[in-house]
Image (cartoon, rainbow, N blue to C red; front, side):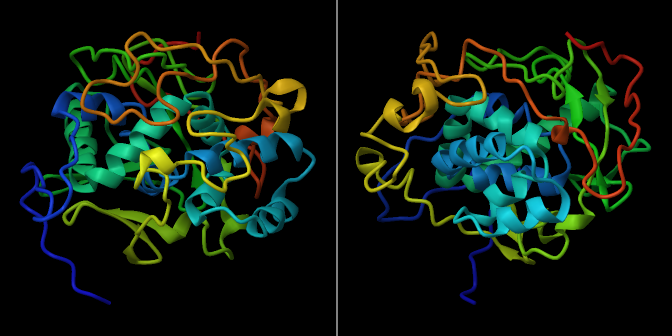
Length: 334
């Protein structure tokens, strides 16, 4: 394996390689805003989301597929997912369907997240750590029965307390970090992943043991916070997605894309997604300045709230697992 250059110290912005085409980098505040919805997720899930965000069309495709195959669960679901042509990161998100749906519903955010990750991975992972430190200082990030929070130098890690049961924390990403953050334009607070209040709560755990035998399963993912790398199979993850390499050519040859900037309605039942419909509701101002305009920027899956399967919160291996409140300040569901 080719040796990778050492990254700059934590907190120091990574510089683009010489002789490379300059890429506009999001500001620190824009990165904070992008990672706020996921920064307090377990390390492996953060890694899966950042990697999968570089494949936004596959995220849509996988979520659509999941909605069309609600009869599958357990080993049958894992086997069916394994045969799909998606990136391992996208397959991994089928372990937590509510997270996959959240990314589909907030497609412009997902696209901007993937774009920022491709063009500034180390800065993106630094932003996750900055937000974790802010949540910890605000008293909203600490070890619980559901997850273990540890600190190594400046790096804060979050892992499931039970390695075979994952709890996705529910929180308001614009209020949990102390000083309020500006909302990401058009952000949709997905039911089961969002609460209205300053704290964190946990719902039902998801047993991920059934996916253990597949190379894209939970335990194959992680983050090296000191090198600021997303890790897959104990090696640095490299996205092979062409989505953000050449924005003008995005969609060429992909069956879901009719032309740069849109999905063909003819390819969708009744002109939309089966999980609630795709509408081109424009954001006010689109993606934040400094974040590239992408084929998905400027619209979101608005309108109808998703109806989501019980698989989003059910255990695939051992039934439901009770959750709890991570902080006394946690609010109730909207």
